[in-house]
Amino acid sequence: MNVLMPQLGETVAEGKITKWFKSAGDAVKPGDNLFEIETDKVSMEVPSTSAGVLSEIRVGVGEVVPVGAIVAVIAGEGGAAVSAPATAAPPKQSPQVQRVGALPVAAAAAPTAGPAKLDPFFEVRTPDRNYGPAKLAGGVVVTPLARRLAAGAGIDLARVTGSGPHGRIVARDIDVASGAGRALVPAVGTGEVMALYRDTPFEEVPLDGMRKTIAARLLLAKQTIPHFYLSADVEIGRLLTMREEANAAAPKNDDGQPLFKLSVNDLIIKAWAVALQRVPEANAAWANDRILRFRHSDIGIAVAIDGGLITPIIRHAESKPLTIISAEMRELAERARSRRLKPHEYQGGSSAISNLGMYGVREFAAIINPPHATILAVGAARRQAVETSAGGVAFASVMTVTLSCDHRVVDGALGAELVAAFRGLVETPVTMLV
Image (cartoon, rainbow, N blue to C red):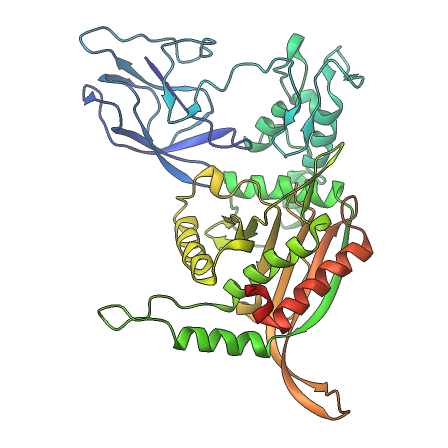
């Protein structure tokens, strides 16, 4: 039985083995961890789903291989190993290809025409037979979506190998080339950049998978999403008071420690989730030829990790108590920093929040994470003089937020309505709980 590098998410094209739990010759049974892999976003232990003997390890620790590559061979109980050459593609529908959990790891087979599905950058992939694919020199056919993705990611199509019918270049091929760091066309040649600094001491830092993915996705976002921005000042005095009172009233455990401790970010997540419910037209995503409107507010929260960032998602945040949101956020952030999130915990979502207030940043505009149509940037709280209703002057705690909108989904008036709903919930926080 061939053990293959599993597919852990739509945008994952390769993985690095960081640890083997078994050695060649060891007996294995279903559920035993075989190896640990690291992708551009997460680290994950991969278990065996079959019993037998680990007869061969083909990919060592530290090696990077594409999804679908053979990494090991398991011989059946009392039988010989069923193996294929290391360079061979996994056979289609083979009963001797191991599946990892619910994910078929034989994901390297060439895609076939069929119903439309989401491509690696979450746009709608159209069937290859439609929409007039273009030809490159030499007769190679490129689908319109693949051409658009290549332009956004800086990919030279002449250096991409197509996996579609008759060698056609499809969206997945662009994702593979981008994720593997191949076929990149720099705006300014690497040699030209380095020549500018030939008399300046510097250190070269190779790009890892996460940084390549961030670069490709954000370049695509800025080139293809028509961003516009709406900023507002929000008074948070009542929000801070409610937080302090809730934490003071938190029950204690046997050691006298509070069972929960709410953060300002927890309350912002709740307010944003409820605001999206009150302005449901903005709780949406762009899907190329249509708009998807969501019933629930699934909020992605940007978390800084070593080498980049990731956005774990609080699902159905509009209906969850603050204590549950707080506990989930703490647990997801901890696992994000140790790269232990599962793909379904950071993929999808209906909107996102990026909070740099804890770094003292007063105001900023975030880049939308496709396919989302909005992202809320949250700045630091500050004391500011404000005019009272009686015409006097008082000091208030004020926070500046900036909403980035995809104009294809959210128009200016709709975005302003969403910001107003959020501000109302924060300035009168009891209303987010009813």
